[in-house]
Length: 284
Ligand SMILES: NC(=O)c1ccc[n+]([C@@H]2O[C@H](COP(=O)([O-])OP(=O)(O)OC[C@H]3O[C@@H](n4cnc5c(N)ncnc54)[C@H](O)[C@@H]3O)[C@@H](O)[C@H]2O)c1
Image (cartoon, rainbow, N blue to C red; front, side, top):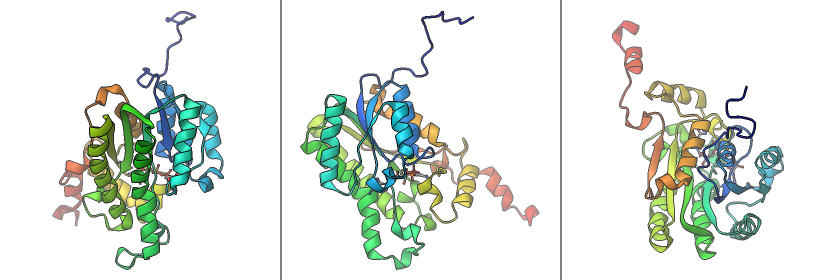
């Protein structure tokens, strides 16, 4: 027998985002961090539009996510001001008013894709990396501000990686993009916070098996290294989505301009016991 009785179905979520409207950038397939965020935000009662670059939308997987979360799909290249304006105005129209959260989950480096070494970057591609992976965040924020598309206490998040602070050679020019992304977060966070109490943060996530993640050279060894250096183990995409939901909720209203490590403790671990043992003389 159902202990909640026939009329009291147990809800999957906690209504943390009930009544909130948002935009989620960057769901490409089931593995994408943005995909998991969309599922959790839906579970928590949010309504939102989904967006990605037109070319990524053609792959089609995102249609399933749109159906599952009752969301409208609005294509937008994050490097185009025109596309972003259209995205914000359509989203407000479809959702019925200004927005309470935005997830920027976008990253791409032609230099990484084409295996260019950091010391010999192709500069056209370097521009692209910075434009798509970092400056797009500035565009999103600037356009939202000009259109007054965000409510007071709205929460805007982008996803980062610890290569912004420390050297991970194979992360290549994406490391520079993440450093810029985090700088934009602080500088715009100040401006938008003072002007309209909008909060802006980055979540610095563990290596995660996704299309963007596995594109980085040596990703598998990278992932095992991070696992062995994190007392709680690597954070998964699902766990990252939970953190995003919390950051979109009203429980984190005074958190802004931060880079928030979500990495099982990796960022503050100098060395782990397991790794020390691998280098001890008895092993040789
Ligand atoms: N996977 C990891 O190991 C990891 C770790 C830390 C941070 N991140 C960051 O998380 C974010 C999401 O990546 P993911 O791992 O879910 O991979 P993903 O490949 O699923 O997502 C990247 C998204 O960026 C989109 N994109 C690329 N160019 C675009 C453009 N011009 N306009 C709009 N969208 C565009 C892609 O279509 C894709 O949906 C990225 O910022 C990434 O750097 C990933």
